[in-house]
Length: 258
Image (cartoon, rainbow, N blue to C red; front, side, top):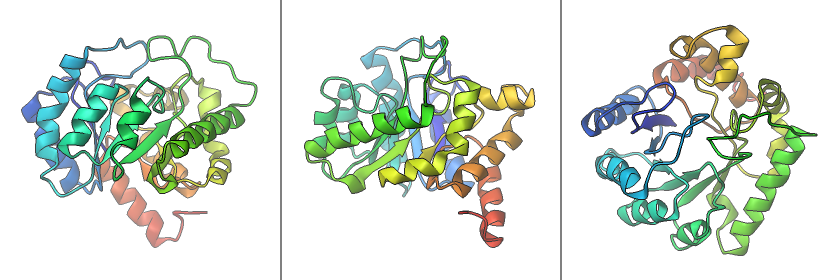
């Protein structure tokens, strides 16, 4: 899953214009991305929400072109109004960091029976989520939350095979929590749905390596390989070409899934 941030303030690659974002979509596909994830609102730690009008103005022009490129297109949003607008336009997947908890979000997805949905775990919100996050058992609490959100969707008629789960690396979690989630990631497979892993350029990788955001490609690729080896079916990445190359080598060696 290639990341397309259509924002001025994303933590590693914001600031693209509409034209540059469209060009980036094409570049990611040329590099081997299987699907694109468009986002018009930064969710980096400490970020503040943008207005509905601004998010739509950023996302819709890029979405209209991305939908012509022959790949599934996901939109990263937590606003039900944006969900409805992009699904009516033809978006394939809703990727929500709040797991469809906003009023009306479940309705928006349930009313489009062909769309996929990614449910992510986050404690707090982007503005506050990294303020001393605490868990007694991070894996157990993430699993319980994702399982409950799945049950809510299924009770509204959303088929299980439309759902992907994301443990939310870096969203309301310390470095130790993130590492524990990776180490125990296979336990999340008991929920019975494919897992999406989003480690790309995250601050935990910076802490582990001492590298700045622009220097985390190697660590990001290593984390993606580890996540896939431990059962992830989708990796959400900035560095598509490097990740695709690494996965090809691991596939040839029979190491993708341990």
